[in-house]
Image (cartoon, rainbow, N blue to C red):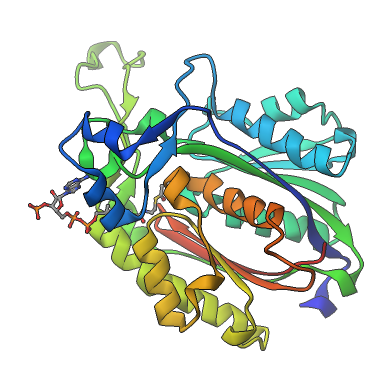
Length: 337
Ligand code: ACO
């Protein structure tokens, strides 16, 4: 890959943000028929953060995470060329990235949204790396942010136990080819299973067809998920995605220092580690504290691991996202900071 690129791309800084309100399993067990024991055993989740302020949205979390990433390296936001917001819960269906551009003062940046649920951050990093490695841009802010609590049916115990809100931001910058840190990727989609995980739009049944076109007041439904199918999909596709990616790079699985998976369910993480025959010590996990934060989960986990100095210069990291679409994908990073 290095030979075909004009310049390298590496993650220079990360930041994250979560709402203050913690919703514990005990709290949820007062809302639906469940228990802390069931949730912890089946998912590993103990609590999640929920955005309750009706005046706040995914944009507020994304702005906070972005400012943290910028402040860490004292970067002037005017140096950002492009902002990619991976989200499935925008506060504007036309896109929310432009609000972030305005609020962080990145007036020279183009900005757009990318929708791919829990694979969103992986796809956004890959997109950003292409813009940089082909020489088009120097500095890109990639954000994974979601507030799926707004799309959760809080009476449905099979989904409301899983999701939390959050945001993670990464500043990706051009560097020499020798320092290239985003060294390989692989992405896939299987649309045949799109109904297994969706927030579908439903036309109103009360619409008056005689006055068409009219405002028919349709609306999006709550998250609908076939948990068992999504679970089977994740544990079968993710290990193969990682293996096919590292094989192309001639990297052995033993050489991978860290695995950062979309934080959906501890059992998925454990099964993937088992299938890859790698130590669970190499799996970065924080889902016990945040639940499944969709596009935010990978940058949240990565950001915390970097802050804890777990990740060292030149470490190989395999990052995999998976979710609605159904979509899945892997990026292989060599840490160059
Ligand atoms: N508390 C207690 N019992 C429950 C609960 C609950 N919260 N939820 C379901 N149950 C019951 C079911 O009703 C069922 O009871 P029954 O046997 O009497 O019918 C039983 O527990 C087993 O239910 P399953 O759905 O089979 O439970 P499972 O072990 O599959 O766990 C779970 C469910 C946690 C949702 C799991 O399937 C899962 O994690 N799936 C993957 C989800 C995922 O990874 N999503 C990622 C993408 S997210 C995105 O892209 C936005």
